[in-house]
Image 1 (tube, rainbow, N blue to C red):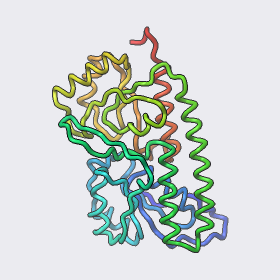
Image 2: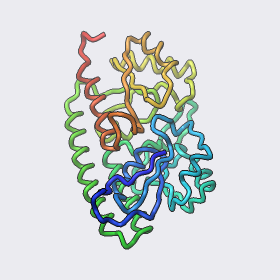
Image 3: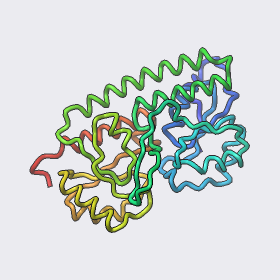
Image 4: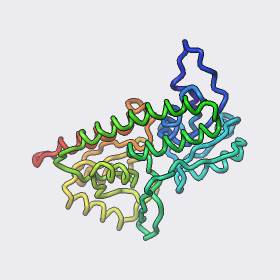
Length: 288
C-alpha cells in the first residue's frame, strides 16, 4: 500500500498532517496528494499494475485504510468494491470525483448501455477532479484553506501545461484512429481529437464472442490501423494471435499508471499521448 505526503518539505516547520484520506485508483490518488500537500496523508487502495475491474480487497487493505475520513472513488461500476471496503475500514464518507464532468455513455455487445467510468483520462477532467478533492479537503480542514487553495492553483497550472503539451504531441497526426484492448480511452480520444475505431474486449477480462472478434477484425482491416494498444493491467493472450493474423503490432496505453515512466497522473497522460503519437507517425504505407 502507498501512503505519502508528496509536497512535504523535510526541512520545513509545516504542521504535520493529522487528516487521512484515501483514493481507490492511482490517478485519483496522485491528484489528491498533489492538492493535499502537507495537509493530509493520502492512501492508495489499488496497487499499481492491478485492475480495478478484478480487484479483491484483503484484510491488509482494510487495515491500511483505518482512520481515513473519506474515500475518493470513481464510481459507475469501476470500483464498486469501495463501498464494502469503506464499511470494513470504518470510513464515514465515500465521494465520487465526477462532479461537473460530462460523462460518456457506452454500449456493450449485448446492446446494454452504461456510463464509461474512465473519465480521468483527460487533463480537463483532471482539473475538475482536483477541484472536487480540494473542496473536500477544505471541508475536512477549514483552517488550511489558504494552503489547499495555493496547492490547487499550482497543480491546475501544471495540468494546463500538460494539456497544451499533449495537444502539441497529437497535432497533425497522419492517423487519428486507434484500436484498444478495451473501451477505456473514449474520454482521452474525445479530448484530443482521436477516434477509438475498435475495441477487442466488450468488458475488461471478458473474452469477446466470435461475432465481436469478427467485427473487430473487419474494422482493423478497413480502417488501416496497424497497431492495437494493450494495457499493463490486462492479459493479452487472446488478442496476440489475432493481432498477428491482422499484421498488427501491439503497443501499450496505460489507463492507470503508478508504474515506471508514469509515476504521476500528468506523466501518465503524457505517456499515453506519446505512445499514440509515435504509433501514428511510425505508420507509413510501407509499414508491415
